[in-house]
Length: 207
Image (cartoon, rainbow, N blue to C red; front, side, top):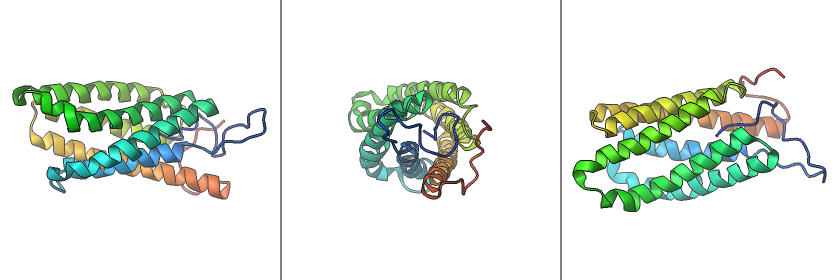
């Protein structure tokens, strides 16, 4: 997720030999991730009843999942390894979340569901922490997204693994912060592509 434009400036990736210049797929991936995370985090933060979770599932499969997966594939086309791994992985995360909530969790014994879902979240926390360590050559806004997301997964992992519901609620609030950072970064990238310069500061590394 994120411009994740490998430490380059706002512009689109370098033109292939054919002369075709692909658009920057990062804003699409960031928006798919940000909007889906926003809606789910509102429920995790207990601002809206979790009974509304089915509303998240459509976003998870279509926008957070399919759109991000496509963004990841397009990042491969631009030669951006970091963006390709990030968007493809989190697209797969949202698709797996859809199946987890719709089918898999219902097959688990109630006494074991929390620990199993907690393990799932801890695995994603480890992956996200790894991606955060790989993000230091990307814009500061992107680094912030990965830092906040790592904390979000850790809190949700603790909360689902036997912690109190307050840990899940805290994870929801950090999820809201993560969504805000992702959408801010997406807006900054879209503006940069539209106006040919950075309008929102993203903290791009110097070349």
